[in-house]
Image (cartoon, rainbow, N blue to C red; front, side, top):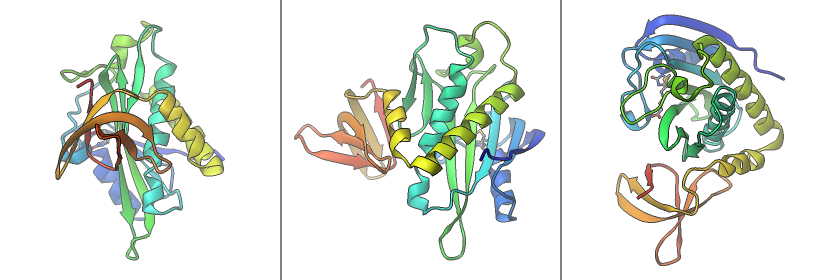
Length: 243
Ligand code: BTN
């Protein structure tokens, strides 16, 4: 069944992610969406800021996948595929869209969208909800990034219809994941993966290593082959391709 989205739109918020987390803690259900036209304290992965001027999509929503926190990590690939599918509907031919592990969406190698997924646990450390935050550059483009309007078919890309398009793809991929598991999601993601079979540098909290990006394992970890032929799996960290 499609998710019944209940969308709350604000002119400005500190962060849709922080607000949707509060709503999840208060018990609001799956499908609750918070959107802001600008954010004053937008957050990215790994504690970075997400600069959020007018003209782009900033939204966060609640999912309740009823699984362990470890399995819920797969949702980041579900969300990346949904963003990718929505972009496919507005992008002009000739641009190359790729998915950079774990969940950035690139167009011609430049970041167009980012996804931040956070778990909300109950007192027994069971997953109560996921807060899924998505930022998509449409009109306003940070340095070194790209916006959809630059690569669109020439028409305006209005924010709210793009949001609705994206939510419909989230519903479809989420239902597929719930019904069929991670295997198809993994394969679809790999088919669009950025830098597969190419060199990669991984920065972890305890050091840096380089190797070849070979695969995504059955849990969503990046599989890197090291120069000595051994494999290393990466669950978190910053990954740099094109080194
Ligand atoms: C990334 O680092 O790539 C993830 C960026 C996620 C940004 C979105 S914008 C909507 C939501 N609210 C936030 O504060 N962050 C996420």
